[in-house]
Length: 128
Image 1 (tube, rainbow, N blue to C red):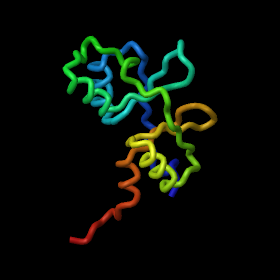
Image 2 (image 1 turned 180 degrees about the vertical axis):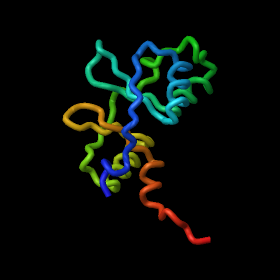
Image 3 (image 1 turned 135 degrees about the vertical axis):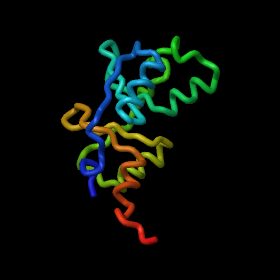
Image 4 (image 1 turned 90 degrees about the vertical axis):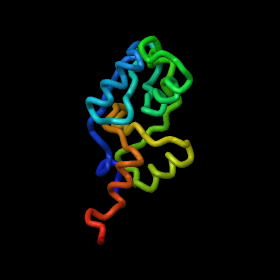
């Protein structure tokens, strides 16, 4: 199975000046665990995950004052829609993360998560 078959095409894109609370609210409303961060003043795109927000709050930082740019991963590993799920899982394992932005012709086409991969690898009906 390929990444294109498993990825979520619901791509939440936010800006670098959103607060972490705004990002969390948008992510919760869309039921996604990561957002693409597009900063027109920076090269490339980044990713903000639920773990980034959790780490900030855990350090006692104010989610109403903290901006996404300070918590965005800019050194992103991207997946291609044509990758196998094994390739995506290996990239996640090597990098220690749970989400990959999927690029198609240089543009975000989706996000694939560990949950997406597990869903595809798990039989629909598990015997009781």
